[in-house]
Image 1: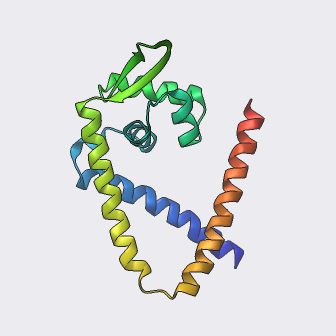
Image 2: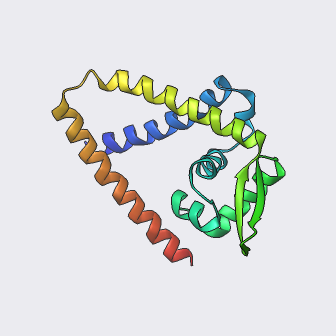
Amino acid sequence: MYNEILNTLFTLFDISNQLEILYKEEFGDILIDYTYTEMHCIDCIGKIENPNVTKISKSLGLTKAAISKIIKKLTDKEAVEIYKNPENKKETYYKLTAIGKNVYEKHLKMHENWCEKDKLFFKGFKQTELKITYDILNKYTKLLQTRLEDIKEHLK
């Protein structure tokens, strides 16, 4: 049974990635130009107060170096602007441009649409079934997060 569960999870991840690509096409050509990580970086910049490398890194669970590379790509695409706070010229912050705001809004709508469709699916289950599923997925997520942290530590 373990192999069947793992195969189902791998299939789920694969289908999820494919859906992400199709949703990007459905919600506007502009989203096609952005990777999953770039869109989620834009999402962070749009949501958090005074976004900087440290805050975005913590939010996305990526290294500061990785965030810096993503920010460079996003500035090249004119989706993000870099600025300094006049009171603290040492610290670098980021804000969305008009292009970035457009990506942010379309990405948000894409997720809302996805969630609404998923809610309809989950309504067909009993609360006890949903609770068991949640518990298992939550434990598996924590396991994957631990593995991710272990790999990051190993790579340092």
